[in-house]
Image (tube, rainbow, N blue to C red; front, side):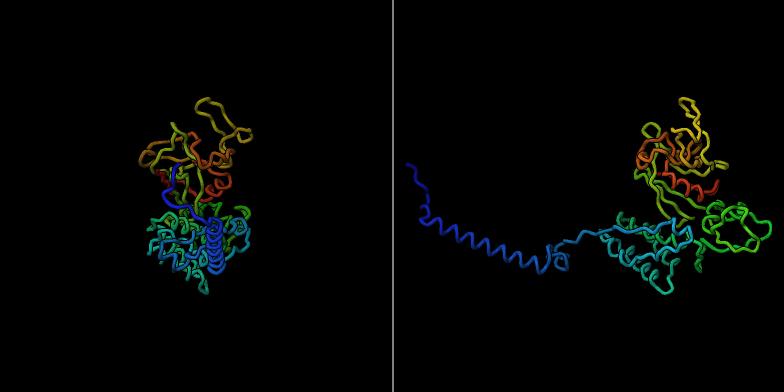
Amino acid sequence: MARYPFPWPSRPIRLSRNLIYIVSALLIVAVIIALVYGPYPFSGKEGEKLGILPEPNLEVETPQTIATLKGKPSPEPNLINLASKATIQPDPKVTELIAQAVALVNSKPSAVIEARHRLNEALIICQSHQQREFVKEQLSKLAEQWLFSKSIFPDDKLCGSYNVKTGDQLRIIGERYKVPPGILMQINNIRSPQALQAGQTIKVINGPFNAKIYASAFVMDLYLQNTYVRSFPVGLGKPGKETPTGLWRVKPGGKLISPPWTDPDTHKVYHPGDPDYPLGSRWIELEGIEGNAKGQTGFGIHGTKEPQTIGAAGSRGCIRLHNGDAILLYKLLVPIHSLIRIEE
């Protein structure tokens, strides 16, 4: 008969009960700690010493551009409740610029233009993806105030006022400031070009608008001159028909509302009323001037009836936008002067 190397306990039941008492006591202590300090007792200064930080929450609400453009005042952008959330590998200089922008926006009166300068500077030097997205979102909110509204802020070199003279036309005023007349009508609540009146003071924008597309991210960033305005998701060329990288400009006479389109492979002509018409609401033709784009023609920015292709490589090389975004971009980009750079 085999023997155990150690004698078997003579009182197993009592030992088990003692073990149960010990475990129960430890559980009670743990519950008390949780109730006093919360489920993450090291989420404060102690947690920072250990490298344990609470997960940042970057969910924010964006003011509705439509409400602003109808003449309803959009809410003051509230940066102060969001500035502390860009905490993953922050750049100290960017953090400082954000803090300055917070103070400027919340000052009385609100210094929107100076805050825009600080945030745009932060965007230029920012390396942290999370901070960069945060700064872009705040700049987009500020654009609802200084750009997509009738308001004109002091010391703003990007927007100003113009006193309409006899014989003036919105088209001519737009050419002078390098912006399409459509955006001037929108921000000034002018119903039609014929409604412009001599002696009237209108808000003008010092253009041009430009764009930069990051092909790997399927994102277009829009700028007024060199100041960031907002971003759009885009669809690009599928494998074998990739959208050429490089520098493009809006082609003279290339802005059209739902023009007929001929399929280069089948030569079938599509019209706006056709159920499978591919160009959506707007067409902005481009011409390549640098890089792989140089000398390229036939490419354009347009809307689509296939929203599932936005954010993917599914076009014949053109840049696809949601129809609402295509309409807005149509009102912002101007031939010759508006540049679009595409990079990987």
